[in-house]
Length: 526
Image (spheres, rainbow, N blue to C red):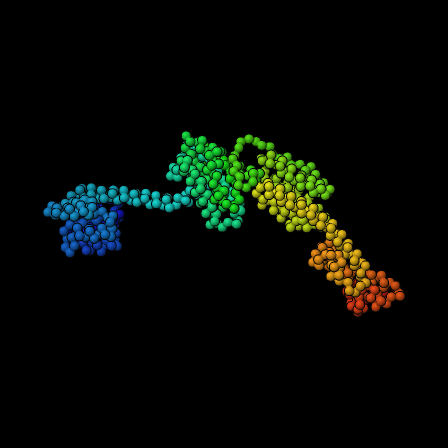
């Protein structure tokens, strides 16, 4: 603390300072002034906590100086020193809220009491300011505090070991609690700010219902994907946390999360704030079972050990047999039957289910490779196929993905058969007309009634060659047969296989066999 002593008599000032230092107060700094004007100059930079001032002084007296000092430092504590004849100044001292009025000559025991009172008052005011500052910062940071506390309430260690007055948030140790988890699915399509707005609106929506029931809650966003909500209820109203009431509290969420896929999982109702982690853990268990229920579902944790699905190799063998038999109806029915059976075993681990469907799809994957069918975009990449399955949130999505692949597989297989007939038609036309030097892709298209683009596409897909490449290769093979006959010269051979220019024929022949027609003829006959 800092003290300013103001007195126009040097001896009086020195005596005051010397005696105050002996009083063992926690006054770290003392300054002196010989009149009011000088005191104001010092106060401007020294900022005293206590001013001990004489009343009568030249240039500016203590009363006037104190009025001016209050303007720059309203909280300064003022103690006046004055003789009996200055009692008329007492009214001014009262108006200034002076702390004390000590008569001269100074009774130092009286001065000690005045200073003690000033210091005590300062400490009270300081605590008040600190308390107000803490409260202001608490209110300002309340959203962040709620976020942190909501997360800590999921952990049994932090909730029992880290002290916090939960009543500041309207939560009491003996209340009943239920934890709710809301999982946001297509979060990648939402900006961080958009996700924050969804959180705020969802919390506001639930809070409005809770307030009507006299309940409270605390919520936060967890892992940028889950809205975590702890609902608190006085133990004498614990029925308000029953399933029927909770369904009511959550009923407006679909309106807030419009066009957003989500799951809602409700944990077990617990008594006492220390047991909230148990409610949270059961909400996590319930959330995993939303895989079976589908989007926009509310799932409550239930006790009981449901049996898990018994995965069997016979299911996979039967599926493969249906595919080999080309029975698309039985193949699809087997997958739908499998999904229906899995719905009865909701304790089955989700990853195990996805892995089983993955093994089923691998049967199609391998058969597609054998038949050269482009059924999967993930062709030759099994990891990508697994990644696709892993990204599904519901059993219905996994089931439909498998059925789509099955139906597309049979469609591709049918198309391939149809294409084989069309390819044979194209090849037959080329066999009959290869000697015609006017033979062209357009001519074949007109004869087969296939569009140019489609015809070229399926031919290349099935044979690995373009139609023009096939025509050229076919003509060269026929030319090789004719060159074995001594009676045909090179021009005759060229004309007989559809080339009206023997030099161009020779160039193509050399390019294909690395021999000229003459060299080939001589080598064969030799």
